[in-house]
Length: 187
Length: 335
Image (cartoon, rainbow over all chains, first blue to last red; front, side, top):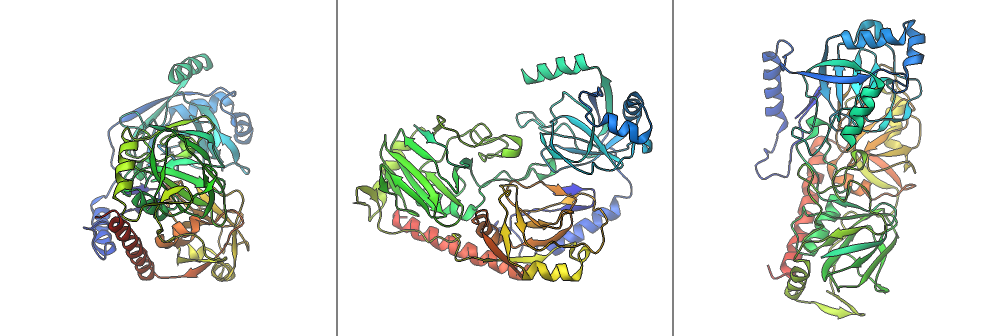
């Protein structure tokens, strides 16, 4: 079962001997019952602290969006780390969170030209959300910092740092602290 | 028990049927692009259908075996040689220790599976031996094979290979190769192009103007060179959107056809992202995804509109053909 911002996917093995001949109808009924029961957003009760270095060396798009928003780079970091964030969904690539709760003053559209390589751990914003890139991939969000944490590690239990409903607190760290933590994580 | 990679080929990876039940964590099943050919290759060497095999892509590898190994190469027809002699395809072949299997070019299609009795013994990651290239985990060190790699086979590969080959009732030496005089049917190898791929209309069909909705099912599309295991980019008419509203990220499936802002569709393949924010113009019938996976860059296809019920019937028909082929193979093993 895959929840997302807009829709839920149910992937099922239709070749399984116990798979019902017409699986969609009972699933639809079940989901409608769930929607009726879920009247409000449920709080998973967990807070994930994410250290982020907002230095412009790692926050690749900081200078550009600072100009665009007429805010200092330090003010962007301050606002981003002060807001209350919540994981809305995990998807696209392993463990990648889509995090809501961005300070409305920081709302910027995606980059007109996506970057061909966004590094793993990049903390990036677009529209009303923050994403933390779990792996180096192409991407169009505006990178404002980087975390030394592994967003996804198949050898860890649980492998994913984030789950839908988690509250997220971004904790600013300096470049030296980032480098030390990243070196430790790589060792 | 191992094999040495003397030449890696274009993109040779360890793949099994895939890693299931983790899409809520953003982990896609991945696995063989053509799971039908994988299942047949495994069946031909007496394996369970979900053992890990090597997926060959367009240009195959050169492999030196360091044990006796019962192997089968299934899927796209590759020019392949065993110690210089033509390797027969789609059937069990007993490879002797020290022999070299050299797969060259696919004469049609794109992908074939080299199964070995007992499977490739890579450590499972999150329940599967499949290589997931975008996140570099699974399979052999999370990557495609390189020259000099040594892949572990099962500990008893020699013993089970010899024992299984002994059970084959029509086994014989033909042109110096220990094999059988029959072969499994190639169920997914491409017929003449453009191949016809059945697809259901997508959730966001109405986001496209009517000319584009029609063009999708009328055009002949070509697989672009920048296609990969994540998705096949299709070259053809640009599909114009009637509305340009962004779509919030929602789940995607194997075979989803999404259309980014440039108007050129992308068919999502085995390593696709679990969610996406582009409008979906179609969903490919699951029975036809393995056939699509057999198109090499430049390969041509057309889409034929189908209903969910027709897609389900296509799937059942494919399962029946695979089951019949596997029964015939089991019969040859005296089961």
